Length: 79
Image (cartoon, rainbow, N blue to C red; front, side, top):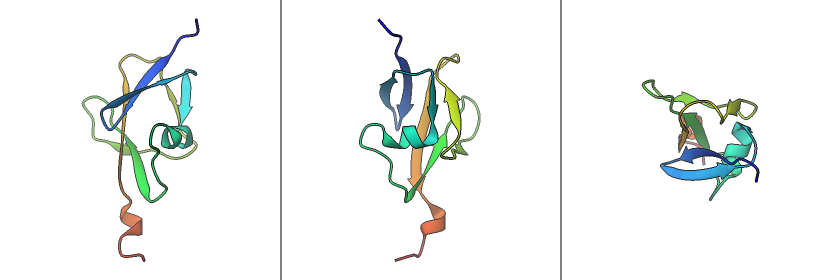
């Protein structure tokens, strides 16, 4: 059986079939993260940082990657 790799989005755990996942793929998991929101990764003991669409994460590294979404400040005030 193929290994499943785990990561979290907003405290919800998801499984992924590949060792690597991109920002675009993370946005498509679960209920999905709309383009109007920014995607962040929260490394342990560090502040969250913005994730780009092309950025790739190794899900086989120690610990579990944690991601979260926030309203995009660049969209503020737009109709």
